[in-house]
Amino acid sequence: MSQLQFDADTARRIEALYLIDDAVHRRELVREALGAALGDRVLDAGCGPGFYCLELSETVGSPGSVVGVDSSPAMLQLAKVRCAGRDDVVLLEGGVTALPVESGSFDGAVCVQVLEYVAEVDAALAELHRALRPGGRAVVWDVDWATVSMHSRDTALTTRVLRAWDEHLAEPSLPRTLGARLRSAGFDDVRVEAHAFAASGRDPERFGVALVPLIATFVVGRQGIGEAEAEAWGAEQRELMERGEFYFASTQFCFAATRTG
Ligand SMILES: C[S@@+](CC[C@H](N)C(=O)[O-])C[C@H]1O[C@@H](n2cnc3c(N)ncnc32)[C@H](O)[C@@H]1O
Image 1 (tube, rainbow, N blue to C red):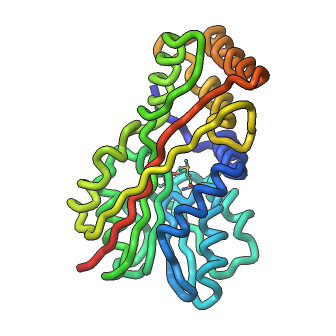
Image 2: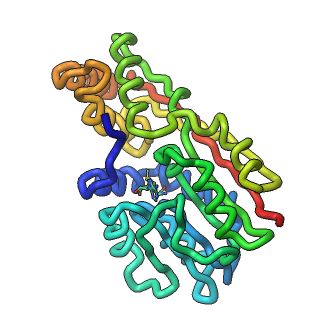
């Protein structure tokens, strides 16, 4: 069965997810890792609803500019609304394996939770390398979904649900190979930092809490999970939230690398 499609409904759900505190915190970490400066020209590969485009355009100011590229017209529409009035933001429809940008034309690039959805990761990394000028810096961020741990009374069902959720992307544990692949793509000074995101209780500002409805919807019809089982799984998680017993943790990985040559 197919992985997650970034259609209008999914785009709206992801936009809502990226308004929560955990997502805001992640963007702070990404911007810090990139270290963009006033006047820089920055690429956002797989820009989604345009949060990074807007925030990075505020960092680089009018002497700089931001180009957001995404293959989903629905995502680009949200990004267009978000970045309305910012003449220094250009949004382009295109794929990360064939970026519609000139070679060597960017000081920095971000690619956040995109490559885990892409089958040809090496081609995408080669494109990021091509787009940067020598000395330019890339920040690539992905989740190792095998690091998810959740509390549940039905551990067998939760294991099946998480296996079914893995089908929402092309590479559920991409961070395990990203460092080597960045070096193979020609990047130097490759660094990685791990960031744990945990939720305990029912705080809707945590990734874990916000992800439960997305997971419960996606897994129906996968790994033999029917509607009733998915609903039962979601109901148990909501009940755990009500009782203050919900627990979810996952580790996300921030890779920073430089194009030297
Ligand atoms: C989970 S969202 C992340 C959006 C954004 N990077 C952020 O963190 O706010 C993944 C995005 O990657 C885009 N995407 C997935 N595969 C792509 C590809 N091959 N080329 C360009 N964009 C792609 C999707 O359309 C979606 O907007």
